[in-house]
Amino acid sequence: MSDPAGAVTGITEAPAAATAFRGRPSKPRRRGVGTSWPALVSWAFLIAIVLVALVGPWLIAADPARQTSSALLPFGSPGHPLGTDDLGRDELSRLVHGARPLLLVAFASTALAAVTGTGVGLLAGYAGGAVEQVLMRTVDLALAFPSILLVILLVVAAGPGTTSLVVGVGVSLAPGLARLARALTARETSRDYVVAARLGGTRTPRILVQEILPNIAGPMVAQVVMTLSVAAGFAAGLSYLGLGIQPPTPDWGYMVQAGQEFLYSAPRLVVLPAALTLLSVVACNFVGDDLRDALDPKGTA
Image (cartoon, rainbow, N blue to C red):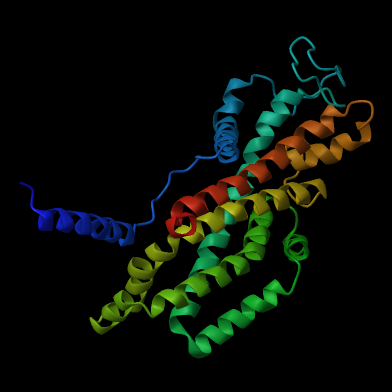
């Protein structure tokens, strides 16, 4: 015979166990990168552009600066798959060689902005008091100027060229990263692990680099990647205005400026470099969003 009491007990314990299981908190699951098709396409495009910039110039035999009498050849011309420009220079070679200076300026200026902005934000958020006030008021003053205007002023003051372009873009983009780093650092400074490190006598530089920086790296990396798109846009825009990379070095921004005279007769001279620049900027934004979601599982749980 079955025990009625045991049956009742089994019936009552099962819902209780189910309730306990449902009430157990679940950990946020960290997802990988490239899980959505826009992010996957953006990753693939950026990787392809970087590979073209690194190895493309060795694979394309044509000299991008060599002028010939074969001007404005159309698509599919023998020896010139994308035709030639108004000076007879191979368009495919110029597009391939033009990727490297744009990416060089974008990556170098973003690195400068990341190091400067993160350093200022870490120091301001950790120190507080008068140090924070002085640093952040300086940052606010820089943010009061439109970024593109600040870049133009810095580049004009230093003179056109790659170095001045990198410094100008990097300095103009650093304040935004400094504000984010300061907010994240101020939040982490009151956490137990930082307090314990202070009480243990750990020196301030070590706390900033080994304790706080790894815990704010996720949001900062995502923002830095998005900043890369802005840097690429600034670099191309200033080259278009004649303040960036100087000819005869091929550059997508300058190629748009040089080809606009032939916009109706040879639109490819404008459309191709402009499209590559636009796609690069958009891809950086999608990749930045993807990294932010991947590095912040709480936001996607």
